[in-house]
Length: 505
Image 1 (tube, rainbow, N blue to C red):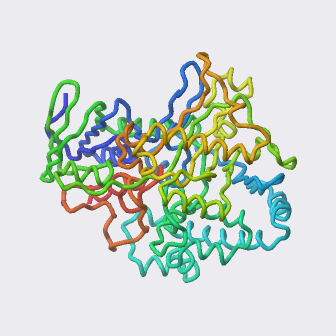
Image 2: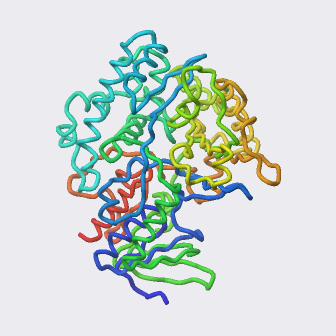
């Protein structure tokens, strides 16, 4: 039986809402989580996407970088985040650029083979030494009250402030690097889920890059063992063990900022009250629930393709084993010129002719997501994330545009492989290929994510009004605990932690 009153009512059972619930319940607060779907985790879930195929795919979110070790320790989460041996591989003609975390000499040889010397490697090392220092200094502040702009500048130092916080990252990369391929590899982290020109003075690409290099003080992008659902499952277990109540199938349809939440479930409509209301929903949804005006939808920008392969595709590069190439981030036509052309085409309302994308083969790092039969047969999962695929491209004709984007993306991938990737797709028992594709409009339709924006809205700088937590709204009793909060975005739990701390006062 639900109570009529709680210390905290959390709207949305995504991973951030679960983090907030766990912290508040551990502090002795009475907590209710209301989740519209029939499961918790939001987009951080695992699924057997293909009938009869024993593979657990991280269907939406897929890697973990921003989740602080401190949250894992404080909540006693039983999860394993496994570091990938290889950072990235970028095909270049009959060769390719391999960044090997475990072999500096091999990385150096790859840079020399692709770029013709050591200058680009030296520039690479200087740039990432700078971002590593920023990560080490900024990451601990993400779980503390906000620092202001001046204090953040003192913290990161003048060079990093100028290069990452003040100048367009496109200018910085063009100045620091000469090779088109290397420029593109650096810039892709500034464009994940973000439709932006790296040279734009608005610096949206800078903010995206920053969040992709500061995770947990290292910037490592790790594979969650058991799939992304293992992370959400551990968070739900922590919240329940601490005494929080979680109600799924409960759709919130109104929030009174004085402390009431109206929702409906299978038994009818209900109202509960809370001393604090923590909203894990996107800001545009929160505004609607509060009775506000219709704000413009955010614009997501990505194409997600999930696959199960019968085997890894062959490469053109004789120097690199496919297990190494696909073990990290495999870049597809993401050179600097490729990115610029794709942005220009998408800005003109056209699906890019050679879509830039990257793929990740999680099963190479975590074989447990495959059933024994698939492992023995040499099968693998593959996740593709396409850039410069804004929601607007898919509004008028969602199905036709989705198919066109998929065909163009697979063709783009085939251009850098020694064989078509479709020849490697596993077939389900019913004969269908193990491939599914999701556009921003699909995410909006399936998950209720406005504009299909994976960060809920454009990312913000990790500084602001000194002393606040970056979760405050225009109403004292309502806090934002989702990815749209300041210092939100990615699978991090940071907004959930910070909203809980703000509520505990």
